[in-house]
Length: 104
Image 1 (spheres, one colour):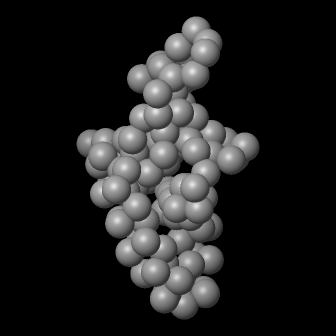
Image 2 (cartoon, helix red, strand yellow):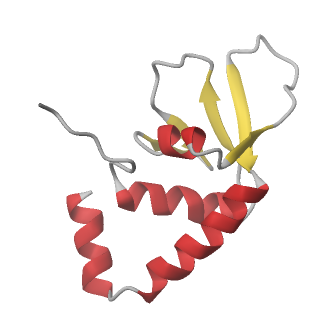
């Protein structure tokens, strides 16, 4: 039986919230099966689902276009979470952070 974790890749997730807390935007396609997203030009493979499912993002009004891409920023709840998660991440010893990045 396969188990899933709430945050499959901790390093990627912390990178995503670090960028989002600095005001960067996340772009995701309207294909719900697509787990990938882009933040500040960085393609992320696993961060979309936890950010979206835990209500950490607010969708921005659509720009002109065909509606295939959606743009998001941190929600107020997401901003609070990102600040706490980032502070906790920086408190961890360097080797522990490196191990989390290597192992996911």
